[in-house]
Length: 217
Image (cartoon, rainbow, N blue to C red; front, side):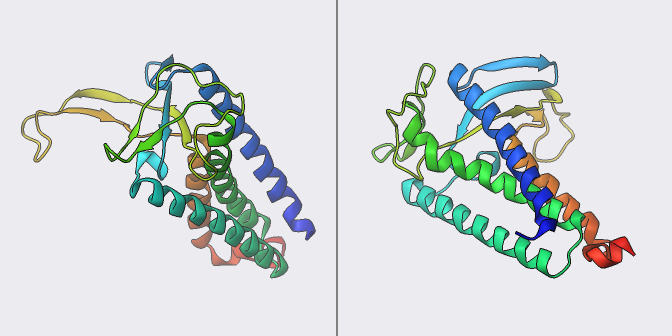
């Protein structure tokens, strides 16, 4: 392995470990929809996501298979690209930024690959009702399984409702409606992807920082 990849890959493994530890703790101790208030504006709120980030989903079971498969190919592509960047002399900042994105992709694909096999409960798609069906009680990690490989659901829990209230009537479209900011519930893996993309954007503002040789000269 290229020595410049050692730190990014170690960081990636650490981030995936933190992400999975929190997910397993939440799924093994919280009922679906249960919350734990950390502060007035930060809650651990357990929800499961059969789709993409922030609860976006489409296509039922087929869509889930396509999404999970895409994530696996994306991970392979990211690893290949990181190796290529390292061989081309990319700076450690670029590789670390990529490691955040890789950790996020890995963290969520592990849920899809394994959680349906190792837990006894999870969201399951019902063809009759054309929707994912919720379940009651707390899931147990007993390897009974609730879904085939690739059909496990991503565990989300980070919820930051900074503000709740009725919007002023004079606002267009949403005036007078109840509004929550920030509504989406996400996880550490999602945060890693976001951080990685922001870091790459900031680095792109200084093209010379992409090269290890330039960054050390």
